[in-house]
Length: 138
Image (cartoon, rainbow, N blue to C red):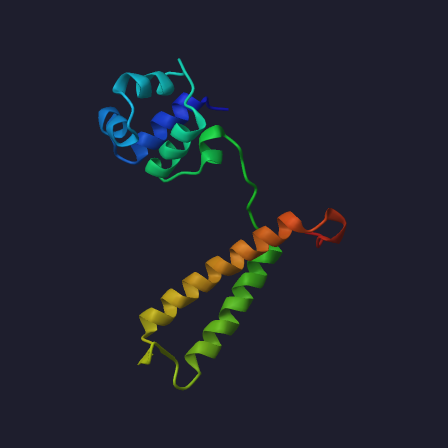
């Protein structure tokens, strides 16, 4: 498992920030950030939170905590089937509008993407809170 310093450096570089730029945005010195990235010192909780926000990653990712959110093939199939049903309903309904304006095909596709995201997140959240003995066999 990678150390925190390596993950911090990779996240910063992936965001396209130089060390001095990131330090300035975080309100810390360049030397302090360098110490974090070289594992000489650990950031406090508030600084770690700021870094995660700046680098567009979760604190869990930086700390190496893996959140299992892979969906099973059955769940993927269920989502695809549900999205196809919704898409058919949307395409074949008369007078589909948003804020009084007819929805364009692009708007419908955007709505479908948002709905698929919601469907996926709901399945993941429900899985986390469903006792193991009640979960479907995968």
